[in-house]
Amino acid sequence: IGGGYYNVADGISSSIIGGDYNNTNGYNNSHIIGSNIYADRSDCTFVENLTITQVPTSAVGLSSGSVWNNGGVLNIVL
Image 1: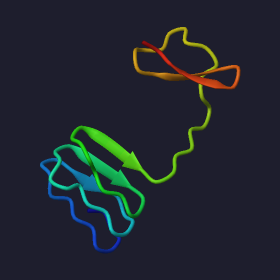
Image 2: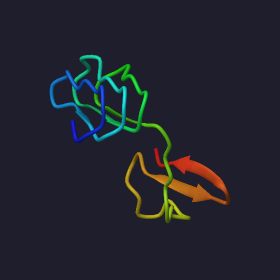
Image 3: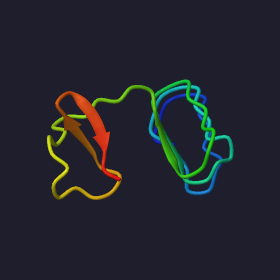
C-alpha cells in the first residue's frame, strides 16, 4: 500500500497506490489506483479514471493486446 486511508491489499503480490477505501478482496496480483475500488478478480489492474496520451494511430508494429486509435475509435490488436 503506497498511501491513502482504509486500504486493504490482502492478495498475494497485490498493491494499492494511494487512494481511500480500496480492497483487493484477497485476489492475487490485483492492483488498484484510485478510491472506492473493490477488486473482483486476480491478475488485473483497476483504475478510477484513466487517461491515455499519445495513442498510436496504426496497428503496424504493435503487439497483441495493444490499443490504437482508428479514426476516433479505440481498437485492440488481436
